[in-house]
Image (tube, rainbow, N blue to C red; front, side, top):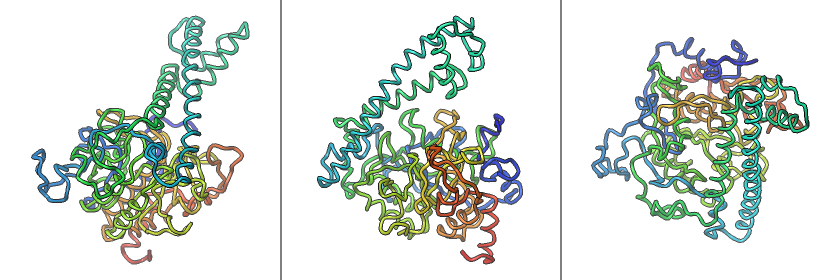
Length: 503
């Protein structure tokens, strides 16, 4: 079923039963349960790439450190961070970075076996990306020539896939051009959108080659610390704003959680009565374990009750630092909401490591009880509803939430659709904030269990990783086997808070 424009922008708030769309039943929850009730304020830390602190839909929901005096260069509250008014920036002025296995090779981290594993991963991806970039650049030339031909044939400069059916091919070349364009236009609504997508793809591939996989590149030197020394602190600065417009990930994530619901602008975030703490720790490339560990501790020590972690990587040489930080968060009753990752992998398979995680010691047994890991769904209920990119795992993923083609905030007061488990995690962070706002007596572990147990468990088989040969029961793809449902979660939270249900 084709969604309306309004449904496309809001599908993740809709209800499976009433709207036949696998959203979170959020609109129903506000309409029938929350109504005009106001809970207590809840601080949610967005541990990400920084965010646009001036965005029209976010500036009114920012966390503010009232014990710090802005811009005086003094650590007024003695928390170890200078001028941290809305959070902290652990990346300083750095932006581009290598992925972890490139850094392992460049710096000779780990033993010979570890470096050999990193080398194989690097060589595999470098070869694939280099070949893909070459093919895509060749495609640009053919696309331009095909576009000129079609414009001449149709006599107009803009057209859609349906217009191509008006052209009768009279030779093999015309047939090839029409076939090529029809296939390509399945990825975009018109030629301009298609060209934009191809250009964006080339930019991403070039960035991968020039920075992420470039063994000679060192994006960290501008920061001035040793990122492999957890005791080397005092780096970064108190401005957790995105550095450039393209650094948009954290802004998009923040909007999903808490974009202002009362200003008639842009979008409605999942939660109201939320303060967003921005922690810039995820660069264009792989995050450093040190920044993540210190970022978690910063969030906990400065009052966050929920931390959204829409990031991940396959190598983590200092994973212990992050594990210790997760234990610290658990000891302080802070919920950690983690994106499952976008490789279409079964995370229960040891060949598919994904960091951070909460299963360090024994497979299937969590070493902390405050981490909830989220897979992603698309807006179409049925056999294809698991997003093709989403990781899954009966032990290592906890539940699924909307995560494909999500409309949210972008830098400079813009809005855009983006997809990934990075978008599914903030859905759950927002719901967790909603629960903790209205039922502040509930613990992080209780909130996690409520979200998992109150979800909807559809009895159907689904395609995973976009592979038609890989069809599995949906309830075997996560620990809960369920889809997040805000309406059910708030009902259960009420019962647990009153002692009617033990959790």
